[in-house]
Every structure is written in structure tokens, then in C-alpha cells.
Amino acid sequence: MISIKVPATSANMGPGFDCLGVALDLYNSYEIEETASGVEITGCEECYSNETNLIYTSMKKCFEVLNYQPKGLKININSSIPISRGLGSSAACIVGGVAAANELAGGKLTKAQLLEIANAIEGHPDNVAPALLGGMIIAVQDKGKVYHENVKLADNLRFCAIIPDFTLSTTEARAVLPNKLTYRDAIFNISRATLLVTALANGSYDLIRHACEDALHQPYRSKLIPGYVEIMQKSKELDCLGIFLSGAGPTIMAIIKNNDQRFTTDMQRFLDTLECKWTVKELCIDHQGTIITKACK
Picture 1 (cartoon, rainbow, N blue to C red):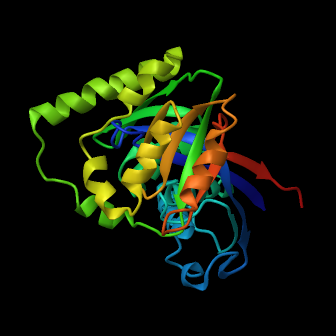
Picture 2: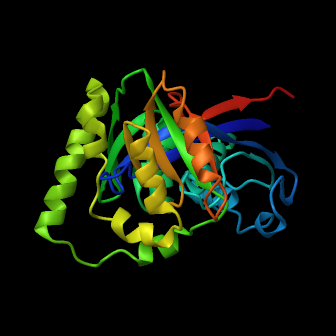
């Protein structure tokens, strides 16, 4: 049996649409073993306990690459990453499944190869890359190949996930995006994505808020999220360093300094006045990515 731990991720990070993501210390864990026959999936809702489960289908994709056919599989899921909230729950399933399949088949694939399989399943690398590798990652894809680089963030930063009790599917969030962009919007995002990476790496805190601005997806997706405008405004009033929509949403992510003792308390007090239920969760950067442990029998 193998145990796999995969971190949550926050993708897009404002202007970095489909190319910037960071791993955070909130995890899904999976225990997976090859059995004599059949497929058994436990630890999740009944609607996911079948052969359409994303962990299982991702394993199958990897097995195809490896030309390996297991007799049967048992998958036990311990999930802490909320589903359809913009925190990389799908990426955690994909990366966990691909990594597990490779391990069961003898560990023949490199991390670069695993990343390309995971990216082919997900369709974009900004979640799967940090989920697999840890840290903050810039990742781009070209003809099926993923090119990536780690961003060395300043040490004294924390991320505050502002998580609602309602979901937003990636499909719905993609559907509201425009089919065409202007040069003005493209320049707006290119300049801010570049500034964001540099500001985070250099600890230029006064630039982060401006660098988190976006013209490609947040103005459109925000309309699907009740309370978005009010939360963004309150976060700025509480002097967070930066604020952006996490992934496709609906989670909103704030960046604060480690010594900020009041943001979480004051923000939760404000959230409690809103119609929908929201929760603030402080998170640190995960630098390890996916961890695999092989249990001795």
C-alpha cells in the first residue's frame, strides 16, 4: 500500500491566468493499494465512489502511458480540500492519481513526465504544477510540454483563504469569460503578472496589491459570487498586502504579513454580517508538493 499527500493550490493569483499557482498547507491524503480484483473507493460521497472518480480515471491515464494493468485497486480518500471552491481539489485528485499509478507500476516516470500527464488531464498547469512540486510556480505549456520555474517567495507571508459555503464549478466560471480580448487588457495583465512575481520574490509589499489586479477573468467571474465586491473592499480596508480570486473561485485569497494579528479576526467578524456563510482560513506555503510514502507489509 502507498500513502500520498497532495497540497491544495491557489491558481491564477490575480493576473496570472492559467500560468501562476501556489501550493498551500491544506491537504488531501490517499491510501492506495493493488488488490486481486475490482475497484473499491472509500472515504468520499457515494456519487464519487465509482469508476468515474477523478483519482481512478487519472490513474488509468498514467497506467496507459506505462502499459501497466493492475488486477484491482482499493482507494481510500481523506479529503480536507473543499470541492469546487477554487482551491485545487480536482488537481489534487489528478496529481494524486497519476503519482499513485506511477508508484504502483514501479516508479518509472520522472516528475516532469508526471506533470505532463497531469496537465493533459487538467488542461492547464497552474494548479497541477504546484500540487506536484510545491511552492509558487510559473508554468506554461507548449505542444503538450510543460515549462516551469519556481518563484522564491519572501519568507514572512501568509495566505488567508476566504471560503464560502457555496460552490462554483470551473465549467460555469469558464463560460462567462469573453472570447476576445483587447490589447489594452492584454498589456494590463502582462504588466501586472510580471510585477506580481517580482514583488513577491523581492518582498516589495507596497506593490503587491496593485500587481494582483486583473482584467481577464476576475471582472467576469466576480458577478457569480455574492459578497465579492464587499469582501474585496473590506480586505483592502484591513490593509492586506494583496487580494485575488483563488482559481476560478468562489474562494477569495488575501496575502498578509506573518505578524498581522488582526486581519483574520476582523475579516471573520465582517463576514458574519453577510447573507452567505464565509470562513477565513490562514494558510502557509507548502514547499514540498506531493509526498509519497510506501507502507511496509
